[in-house]
Length: 597
Image 1 (cartoon, one colour):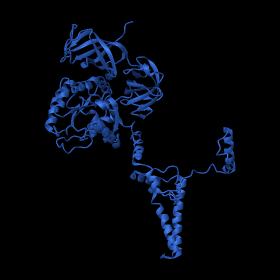
Image 2: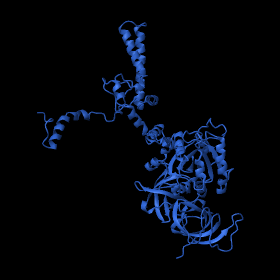
Image 3: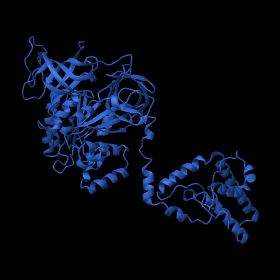
Image 4: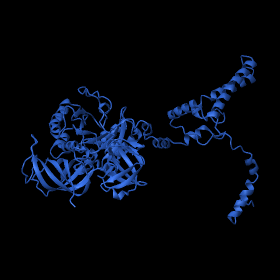
């Protein structure tokens, strides 16, 4: 029996048998030239002809045909002429082969091959080398099913790579989508991502199939931003969705805020990171009225966005394609007339700060291209309008200030936040306030693109060294050691009571929302009332304040928080007070009170 067929008694025996088989090869292997150039297959070889290089073999076939004519004495010219033709063809093939060997595969061949492969979706990529002589071409095509090709193509197309070189050069703008629940915020966000090429058509088709199975076929666009299963099942955004897209001049981050009144704290966190707000309202009969009534979120969101520091507001009148509206100018003007006085009262200037625009999120009408059904609207569509907005003024010279929105563990401690001022670099030493932890920046990602330096306005992911994830809370601020932000528990503030049924006295408790921080607070003292028209302060201390009054009060937090005076740093000096799920007051920090020992 052949020793290789029998089971070995021990592993040493097996090694010996293999050694005897491979022994004669040692001399042959020692003669191999290890410095030889890499083997490059010749695509003009007759044995294996890929379909994307059919042009080249035609010259070979012409040569064979001439030789056949020569043998059968049916050629028209003399034998010398044909020999000359054969030599010229041979020289052409040799020159092509030499170019292939020198450069791997020549540039023109590579480009043609890729173009033709894209045109033929069923063509598989050639693997390790040429097929055997007898292998038919059909085997290669049938081995790869169209489903497999779809899966292969789906993976490498997030369309992020082409944006990388331009990302730092373009101005960064954060856009928050706000409005009443079911106004169409997530759907518009998903449609914008599709129109700008950030979401593939194939992915949306997959979402559409899944949404149809759940009898929710109009929800599929919102699934590009609502990635959570709970959000998809209920059709309600819970957490602030994040995505980004680019235009010719700018790089935009979409912040998709939840519209439901239960998730207003999440919406405030999203609005605090925004430079620009898009208030989405539904033009459908009944839906606009529900959102704009006293309990609706259209009013509250607009006011919270202004309090969070958003200066420019675009009002998108959505669902204009609905049968109850049908691109009606009367309905559009009706919504506009009701909204403008309220937005003016909140603090927006109707001439400079507000821009109205009709659209349809589900069909994408008037988002990127003008719509034919709406001849009365002559302005730019939504995305070109965003691109045409004037640049924001940001100073790179200020101290580093980054308010933390979220944190998690991923090969270290990762934090998310928007850089409000200053510049952050890789390997930079920073201080986490209010705990005064010294940390080092290990890596820096701006919208999932790694970078070495970040400027104000960018939404960042930072991987930090020197601090544990448990030691960080949303609302903490990252500063440079030379210029730390202020922290404390007690401060004086000017407060406007917006909505409260009864009176507010010293000792009243509420929840404070300041930048990304949420903290319990108590009004410890009412210092004076402020006249709304003249700005005069009362000389006596009020015993209480009620709705629509303005006062200066002393507030005390349950824990230490980071804050600045409104005069020095507006982003960290404006706040909202909420109680029982309602926004009761807005205010600004006037003075920080030092703690008594």
